[in-house]
Image 1 (cartoon, helix red, strand yellow):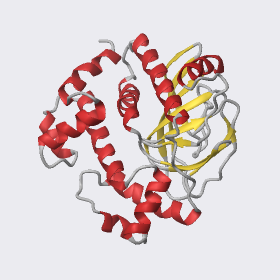
Image 2 (tube, rainbow, N blue to C red):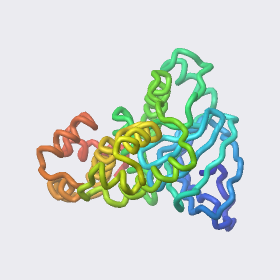
Image 3 (cartoon, helix red, strand yellow):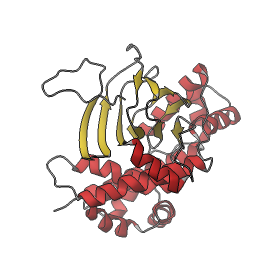
Length: 297
């Protein structure tokens, strides 16, 4: 990822992320970043100009910043302090896509004062796992990125979402929920393979033994390593991906809810409905109806 927006007409180098502004105001900006870098591309040190919260939508990559190192994956949040230097690397795979929120330090300090009790708040971890309280705003951010081109956005709704996202993230970090840890090069490579496999086979029947085999680890060591690096168990991660993808389809189509549930990998509708309500706090039908508030007709 990179926070530099190319000038109009500028042709970026092959490994340079391409940015697209979705919505902005004087003190915040919502953008999408698409990167095609791979193992052969050299890392470059960059700097966060603003407080940054970036949701990984596709792909996985290594991230190093002033608050630590982490392996980032779909559903995880990349955290950046204003003025902090960072590097991103794709040693084990190619490309990623992120939806990023950047906040002016004055606005972010105000949010932090309320959510963390201090304006001196800084992110103390490089990433935040895909936690349940973030499920709904993450889906809405991704839906905005998918629907924004050629559409009129409800700016008040977008700004409310941006501020809610920042408040929820600050509260989660201040409460000690940023529990992942930096992987060793060997474990990072192995868990990256598994993350890529799960992302490509979310609707398939997956089991712990098969995933451990992909990582070339025993089941116990794999489970322990995955939970330590990702911040979730493999089952929690898989279930979150399935529900996230289902929520995206609910936002983007008029397909029957049952079809979306079965395509996402759920064996029956009642299990899907219960899981969806537990994660998003509402039924799939109500979620679909509520999404329209973000995109003006």
